[in-house]
Amino acid sequence: MLRREANMDLRQRLAQLDHVGSLGTARPRRAVQSLEALLEGQEVEGGSGRFLLCRRRFPRDHHHGAVRLDQALALSARWLSRLGRDLEQMDFERVVFLDTETTGLSGGTGTYAFLVGLAWIEPDGICLEQLFMREHAEESAMLAYLADRLRGCGGLVTFNGKTFDVPLLATRFLMKRQRFDLEALPHLDLLHPSRRIWSLALPDCRLETLETRVLGAPRAADIPGREIPEAYFRYLNTGDGWELARVAEHNQRDLLALIGLVSRLARTLQAPLEARQPEEDLGLGRMLACLGETEAGGRLLTRALEAPLPVESRFRALLHLADLRRRAGDRQGAAALLEQVLCEDPAHAVAAEEMAKHLEHRTGDLPRALALVAGVLERPDLTPARRAALEHRRQRLVRRLEGGTKVHPDLGRRP
Image 1 (cartoon, one colour):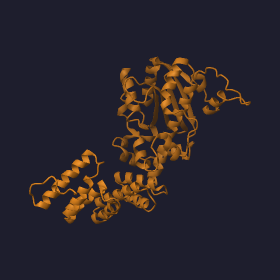
Image 2 (image 1 turned 120 degrees about the horizontal axis):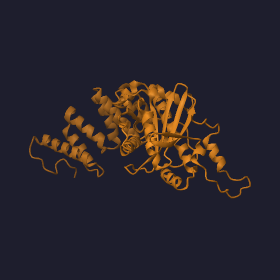
Image 3 (image 1 turned 135 degrees about the vertical axis):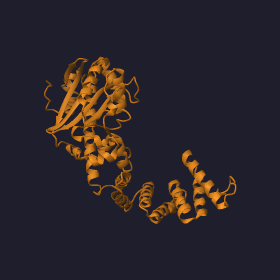
Image 4 (image 1 turned 90 degrees about the vertical axis):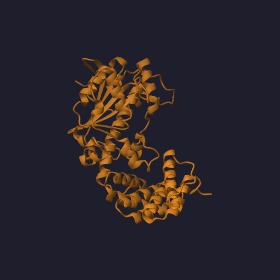
């Protein structure tokens, strides 16, 4: 039987243990605290050995910041199928949110996941489990329990898990000769839709930034992720669980943030025209357009352009809206939007290339098409691939203007 959850919040208990005396005296030396005592975890034993398991429960209507967590279940199969090829098979009633804390940030066979955090939504609440590898000998037992927990689940939700968490755990299963195909599970990696919607509205798309700015749940006194590997190594040397208790709280916040982001994503996709920041309109409009929701995407892009936007963001909105109109058959409308960009930046690479295509294939204005391409080719910041494509277009335009005669290398370039 797992021990009952303590009434006092973990952060409060840590603060009490580390508090400074009322007279402002020096901080008293803190006694070594066992991880088991700090987290009130339960040692689990099985055929592969033992490990430490900590369980927490939250009410189903628990809020993380401004978001109610069980609204994550409203993310419909319709939207999941658009967010990823394998996601139409995901059963959100049985999905597991996963986040790991590791001995390194680069992955590889020498990196271990010493803490695996799991969370899922049940009919009577939200369950959170944290699996601790207190020493390397406990890894096999921890992985065996993880495989049993995930076997038959409805899929995984992570943040950057397709790049880091899942490949790392798959490697550890392989190294321990345990058969479990973690990578076969349907997997929603929230990093990618988060970037598409919020990257233009935020300074970055780290999970902590999204938690603060999108969910309204800023963290206080959180241990930075870069310090977590060293905290684990100190625990191995000293047996003092103080820092790992902070890591456990960090991991718990990550899991709650994952559920909160899905709740926010579900709400955003269900009601895309709710009022929001113009940059968020731009990101969501761009994503919806890519997912085939062209009407809603176009309305959001148009609304974003009605508000003051930074120059580059405005150019992005104009270009995406031009692409939508071109795909809808409104080529003149698309060209008018491209002209708005070129009026401010005649050498804008994307706008100039798209306008050159329009001029060459729709209006026959080859001289202006050639001038636009030549102007962009003078930019020193072009990628090799774009420069090669533009040079190929320049050569073709020159040939067409010369009536098929041999191309001189300097033709079509500005003096």
